[in-house]
Amino acid sequence: MAEYSPVADIKRDHILKLIGKGVRPDGRRLDEQRPLDVETGIISSAEGSARVRLGNTQVLVGIKMSVGEPFADTPDRGVLTTNAELIPMASETFETGPPGEEAIEIARVVDRAIREGQAIDLKALCLEPGKAVWILFVDIHVLDYDGNLFDAATIGALAALMTTKVPAKQFERGEDFKLPLLHQPVACTAVKIDGSVLVDPTFDEESIAAARLTVATVETGHLCAMQKGHGGSFRFEEVLHIVEVARKMGEQIRSRLAQEAS
Image (cartoon, rainbow, N blue to C red; front, top):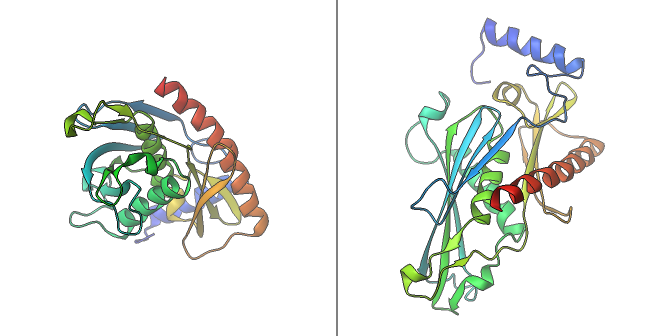
């Protein structure tokens, strides 16, 4: 933690004692996710949107699209851009100003999961090779922060993408159509505290963690992205455990999102 106080030390000791017994301050098991709530279509001006509540962490994701030039090395593919904004109202640890390291890392983790998980058929977003493609912006806004922004933001991005319609009429490119998706990447984050591995950490648990690992999987069970954080390490068996939990959790979350999108 950035600062230490007697209260912080007491809280740390309390968390460690509970973890030693296989439980957590909020009563969850070590491998149990917090309650998840997902709402889609809540921003009328966006092509797609979703609000995710993961415990007390709340994230809003909006999708906007426009027509522009492709990158020179991918002339026949659409463009994906991901940004994250951490507003001070969401947490006393966030500051005003340009995106900091934390916001940049969140955007990169979400972008990597979407891109490496091949969530979007970017080739289907090509209008004229080398000249015109659809550019897709994924904007992540953190409304309340109580840990694990990686999972909440990735779930929100996927939920928003699943309900996105390409605004073809607006750009005189024919009729609107549903965003072509190929896969559904979902992230699962775990931390290591005093030798124990916990998934979906709260802010307090993140603050005292020695190591963090985020694993993204698609519906086939294959891994598509990983992100390691903090200075500590995981044993090989612990990584395998996190991957297995990520697969199971991914199945459950995709089932929830399918119900929301229907």
